[in-house]
Amino acid sequence: MSGKCPACSGRKKLRTDEEKELLIKRLKRAEGQIRGIEKMIESDAYCPDILVQVSAVTAALNSFNKELLSCHIKTCVAEDIRSGKDEAIDELTKLIQKLMK
Image 1 (cartoon, helix red, strand yellow):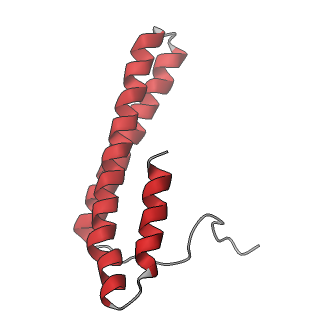
Image 2: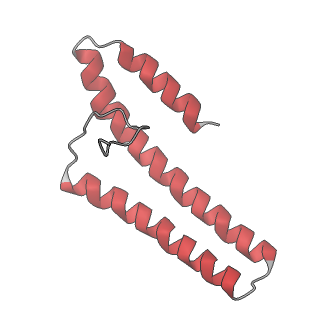
């Protein structure tokens, strides 16, 4: 077994420390919210209260996706197009379709 994620393209993207910090901060926020939801369930919190918190996690992950997608378009996609790799447009289109499910 190669240890490679079967859903990953195998490509890499070098990120600045600032980019990494911003993305990780957003993920940690969502992670903290999920831990809070777990505690709510353990303490028998009222269903609508839990659902509101789940909505907050969804918003946090959507915010993460928007940030990462913006970075991807400005760097990876733009670089591929500049170097003549027009298939980057098809890849981006497919990605957006997956994200909008």
